Amino acid sequence: MCRGRTTRTSRFLLKFFYSTYIDSTTTIIIIINNIFYKKGDDILFRYDLKNNHFWYDFYKIRLVFSEKYGLNYEQTNDLIKGLVEEHLNLMGIIP
Image (cartoon, rainbow, N blue to C red; front, top):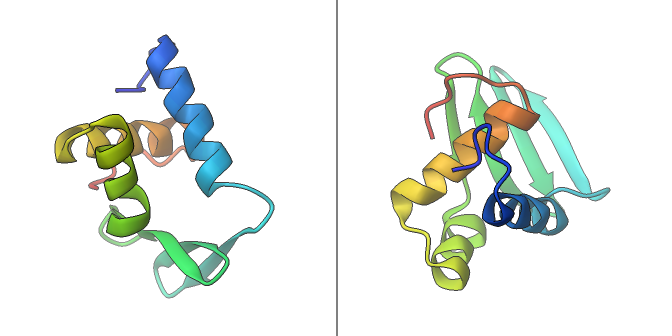
C-alpha cells in the first residue's frame, strides 16, 4: 500500500502510524536474534533476525487499522511491510 507511492492516503496513514506508535517513548531491545519495539510496557513489534519474520500487536495495531480505517488483514500486512521496508530498511520481511 505505501511501497513507493506518495498518495494522499498513504501519507496520512504514515503520519498516523508514526504519531501513534513511534515517538520518544519507543524503545528498541535486542535479545538473541530478536528486535523488540516497545512503547511503554507494550511490545508493538518484534522482528526475528534469523527467520525474517515481523510480528505486530494484534490489538494495538491490527484492530486500529481495521476498525478506524477499514483495512483488512492483507491490507494491514501490506501497509506494515511497506513501512518497515521503506523506513527501517528491512527487506523481504514476512508479516
